[in-house]
Amino acid sequence: MTTYKEFHARSLKDRDAFWTEEAKRIDWHKPFAKVLDYSRPPFAKWFVGGETNLCHNAVDRHLAPRGEQKALVWISTEVDQEQSFTYRQLHAEVNRVAAMMQALGVGRGDRVIIYMPNMPEAVFAILACARIGAIHSVVFGGFAAASLAARIDDAKPSLMVTADGGSRMGKVVPYKPLVDESIRLSKFPPAKVLILKRGLDPSMPSVPERDVDWATLAKQHEGAKVPCAWLESSEPSYILYTSGTTGKPKGVQRDVGGHAVAMAASMQHIYCGGPGESIFTTSDIGWAVGHSYIIYGPLIAGMTTIIYEGVPVRPDAGVWWKIVQDHKVAVMFSAPTAIRVLKKHDIAWLKKYDLSTLKHLFLAGEPLDEPTHAWISQGLGKPVIDHYWQTETGWPVLTSAPGVEKTPIKFGSPSFPAYGYDLKLLRESDATVAGPDEKAVVVVEPPLPPGCMSTLWGDDERFVKTYFSMFPGKLLYATFDWGIRDKDGYYFILGRTDDVINVAGHRLGTREIEEAVNMHPGIAECAVVGVADQLKGQMPMAFAVLKDPAQVATPEGRMKMEGEVMQTVNQQLGAIGRPGRVFFVTLLPKTRSGKVLRRSIAALAEGRDPGDLTTIEDPGALQQIKDCLGVK
Ligand code: ATP
Ligand code: MG
Image 1 (cartoon, rainbow, N blue to C red):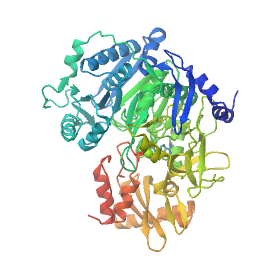
Image 2: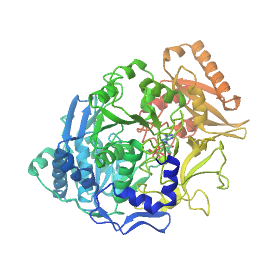
Image 3: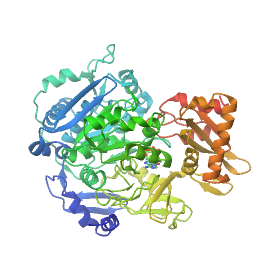
Image 4: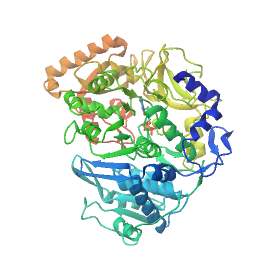
């Protein structure tokens, strides 16, 4: 039995041997000649000279051992449909879509934008790209036309794949008008647009010559066979834009071989998901979590992956747990924001279904506050593993790795650095190593491990400038997150470096104050921002969502609750972190991936322009903030 500590140490000390071993988890058409080429730092090339294919590893190689096993289950509570595909059926569908793409002129290295809701055809399209060596760029369905146009112009695609529409909370969200508008706005529009008609938007207009009907083309390619293109390990597999919480999204580029190995290794060591088991990742395919843990990771591991179109509380707050029961889910992956939504509902929903197959629930995307972590762990009676990662890394940076060792979980902590990451907490001022319990910047000593971004699409210079230039003269990957390590070696993420609040010379992470606010039992979730203050430099200001909004229906109720929350912060953190004001809202402004837009809130509070809001989920949330602050 190795301990996790030994495992992690070996991944850094014996890097080549470690990753050579992990690389055996996937099929190679041609073996690699060298594990790592790091001759041009910070650019890391993994498994140099090796040839492989992601679609082969995710689909074809499972045909013999488990062709009749379910590969993909689609559940939509939006349109009330369910569909499953065995590995053999998935193989046939992917081959057909690959042939359709080739017929539309798509070849190796060409870019394909996929702008679709969570549905099986989106997965087919993604895997079809991988099969023929085309580079997919999935854009979260529902992004506004301007955001889509910006991504089109960055990728210069030859094809765009879309659907007539999506659905959210039972309401149709038409995609086609956005697609048409984005193409009108873009400088490098795709020659062809492949459209899946779900029957959600019967009035959808069509552009002759450019628009191609999915069903018609699919009929022509029934039974098609398209061989996998063998790609050199470092060739690009896909582009994916970051969520855009802090500004202009960055086009993260991933490789082929490193990505495949990283996925396979993480399924084993972190998620503990194996052939024949089911995994339910509640994310959208448009995010990194969806790419890695709805599609590539689970399928490479031979699992049954569940793709879900819908929200966690429709038809009721038990819908996800019913899925776990009905599909014998072993591994589940969701986000803190979803759990905080569930927290507003009766805890009895967590107990209603048989969850005996579930091994653990993983959460990522935002800090997981201690009360929410405790609530969901106790409610489910299962280990709930907070883990921390970024679109850039594609898989966890901080995590517990129960596949190696079941280390105890501390609420509020994403545990330890993942194998392969030489993680450091460095003082922002001089890049020296911070001590235990000292707040500092989370950085990775390069090379970044396999599976992490290889560069920013078309912009090597921006890659180096954005990520490796925080400390002059030192080549270190900056996460731009602020963290702390306790005496037992557990890490805590305290927020983004640009969200740090400076109160009378004390530097506080937004997370620390939010954590204290959340300790009040009436609070469902909150956002804390720093606002310029003449006396103290900055003053924390809190915006909180209550489990029961009726409590603040009257001015007296509001005052009482504000006082109570301040008192809670006093007790938890001390007066230094006490917010100057606590406002109550019913909704926080978040990105479409569920992250709080603290920067925009702070800007409004300081009377500044809230900045680029194209990624906002619901503009109504910002209006509530404005109303609280009395700004127009
Ligand atoms: P952009 O970089 O464009 O502003 P983004 O950072 O929101 O967008 P993502 O890559 O989706 O885009 O998010 C990664 C970030 O999410 C991390 O850097 C961190 O701030 C936050 N995060 C993710 N997981 C956790 C976690 N478990 N605990 C705390 N924070 C987390
Ligand atoms: Mg980021």
